[in-house]
Each structure stands twice: as structure tokens, then as C-alpha cells.
Amino acid sequence: MIRSMTAFGRGEAAAGDALINVEIRSVNHRFRDVVMRLPRPVQPLEELLRARVAAAVGRGRVEVGFQLEAREEQADVEVELNVPLAQAYVRVFRELQERFGADPLVRAETLCQFRDVVLVRPVERDAEGLKGYALEALSEALGAMDRMRVEEGRAIEDDFRLRISMVGNYLEQIESRAPLVVEEYRRRLRERISAVAEGLQLDENRLAQEVAMFAGRCDITEEIVRSRSHLNQFERYLDVDEPVGRRLEFLLQEMNREANTISSKASDASISAAVVEVKGELEKLREQVQNVE
Image (cartoon, rainbow, N blue to C red; front, side):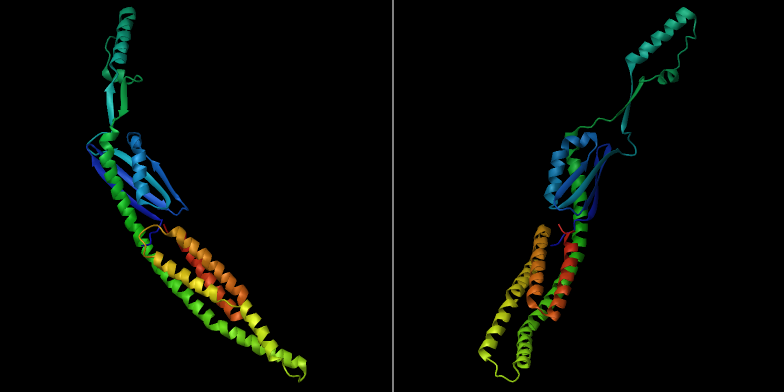
């Protein structure tokens, strides 16, 4: 089964008074590259979460973002009175009143305006307590991403099968044309020799040897057989439920090499034209394979 490397997934889980949101974006990449952005309470779980992503993704650049938010009825910060500092300020105010007759009334809002009297801290959360919820949200996001990857993979697979069929048709044209190339060479050679010989009898054995040598040089049977084998392997890999992008890339390189050899050996305009079409389809396949896991 073909999977695209380009996809998106989102998941969430309620962790007590908090909500864990996970968003995953994946794009094509030659290897697997997992990038994680984690809030501080979840950072101790990074290796575990990274391993879970790696188990689900064979190839591609995957960006995973976690967000830890308080639920609507809960605050995600704690407000605390710095008692020692507030007491120190009160002592100073009393001393000012005793020494200089200052206003002895100290309002709470006045104290709150002084730095660090009121401390605002993020709610401390235990990573171990968040582990199950983080894995739940991550699994949901990975599942959504995989469904998108499979859906896009089906469209890519359809395009693959269409273009493989077209390449196969061009190979049939080339194979049916190949024997005619030798016969046309025999005819042209006979005509040229006859024109030069001025009525002298042709040496049929020598002519046959020359034609045989030409046939050996332009024989493309092996290249066509190998090309068909590569096409069959390509189709079989489309049904394998594991990452196959790298293998498909290799097969396309081999098919392109065979096409170049056919073109150079055939010495025929019709075959060369068909090879151009084959290479055009192979290039379109190569572009699509770049996005296959």
C-alpha cells in the first residue's frame, strides 16, 4: 500500500484540569527526520514520544507540536503571595509612620503594586502523570495523519499504474519494431552495394555476415526483458504494506538506464521516438516517487 509523505493530523486528550493538543505535519524527505516541540512539563517524555512517531513513520520530515492548555474553567497559572516580602514592606511602612508621621494606612492594592509581592507561576504538572494522556493525543494525531497519507497514496498509486501501463505499451512498440530495423538495414545495404557494384554479383555470405554483425550491435532484447522485469517489480511493490519509496526510486533509475541503452543501440528513429516517450513517463514517475514513503 502506497503512503504519501505529505499529510496532517491532530489529536487531543483531557488530562485532568488540562488539555493536551497535538498537531503533526509531515512532508517529503529522503530519510526520516522527526522534529518535536514540547512544553516544559512534557519534555521529559521526548524520547518516548519520538520513538512512538518513529514506529509509525518510515520516511519523511515529521514536525510534532504539543500544547498543554488549561481547560476553560481552570487557570493554567498559580497566583501566590510572597509573604516574607509583603511583611518586609509592612515593617518599612510602619517605620516610616513612626519616624516621620507618614500615613499608617497600607492598602492591599498598594502592596500588590510592588515587584514580586504577588508571584505568578505556571501550574506545575508531573510528566509521569501526563504520559498516558500525551500518548493518547499523539496516537489520535498519528492515526489522522496516516489516514490522510493512505488517501493521498491511493491517488498516487492510480497515477503510477497508469504510467506503468503506458511505459509497457511503448516497450511493446519498441519490441515489435526491433526486428524490422535489421531487415531495413539488410535492404539498404543491398541497395547501396548494388549501386556501387555496377551489376557485379553480390557475395551473399559476406552480406549475411555484415547484417549479422549489425544485428548483434543493435540487439535490445536484454534491455527490453530487464525493463519489463523492473516494471513488474514496480507493480508488486505497490501492494507491499511497508515503506517502498527508496526501492521505487532505484527501479526508476534502472529503467532510465535501460531506456538510454535501447536508444543508443537501436539506431532507429521510431525506436528513439518511443524511448523519448518512455523517459518522459519515467520522469513523471520519479517526481511522484519523491513523495512516497
